[in-house]
Image (tube, helix red, strand yellow):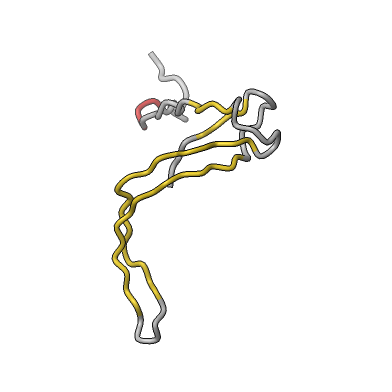
Length: 86
């Protein structure tokens, strides 16, 4: 599943979008003796976003892709012990 975030510049929506995409996957399908399908493994080979429309204002003309927030490492977390004595 994609982790792409969107924003509608027309209404400010950040949370509700209709996303139409095309995916090509490879699955290991396991059918039980009773005929029920269980997908044991799935690999996404290709995924393409075809259309993104804002659920609030109803069009996709103002939808933009948000850049991902920079990841922080454990080294960048401030210490809880406070400043050290000189």
